[in-house]
Image 1 (cartoon, rainbow, N blue to C red):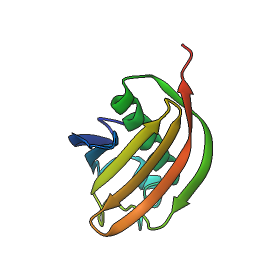
Image 2: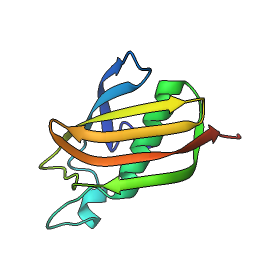
Image 3: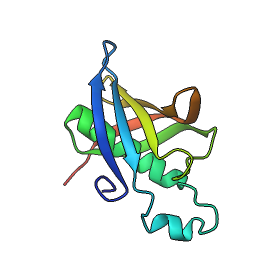
Image 4: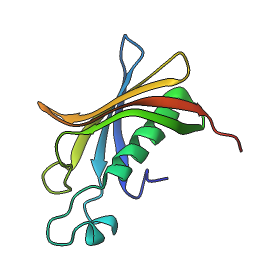
Length: 121
């Protein structure tokens, strides 16, 4: 899990449509930024996806596996210096259809849609 080391949850707001909007802060000194990339740190896309999955688990109260990604669109770079605070909106429809957006103000950094299933322990 990335939560608590890579990012922290600052706020959580349940919307009328059933989606949940999280306010998160990135740990700008995390080791991932030393390797990706030291001179110009960028949050790896896989870390964005993992944050979405973890927040979907929090929103649903279930342990999940992201079994399929239908669409994942990176539209701007998440950087620890330029965008250390983010909003992440997650919604699960019919217990399996996940949609998510990472944004801050007018900037959308990533959108994702896919399928989640309960994780088998």
